[in-house]
Length: 117
Image 1: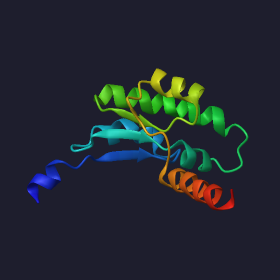
Image 2: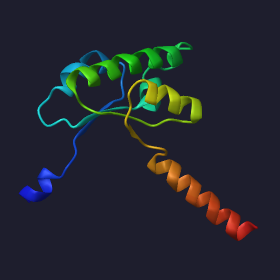
Image 3: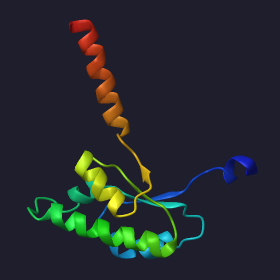
């Protein structure tokens, strides 16, 4: 069990606007291996605010700075090429290119295409 525990990565997800100011403190918690900015949920935390996009981008910049200051990797899920540039420009070095539900949706679409076509 000790060997398995030593191989576990602990990644704190910043997914709510209220968590963003504490990102630096979270990143410095002993045992935290990386910060992940969950921008979909972060955006949802703003509700119907039409300025959510720019606010999430600014929070992303602040969380990225907190990760750099704490010397922990930053993780992000880019949604396209320009977003990839944004994420890597912030210093994200761990990138997820789809979510679990994105992979499931893609697999389901392929099955439907195979059977319908």
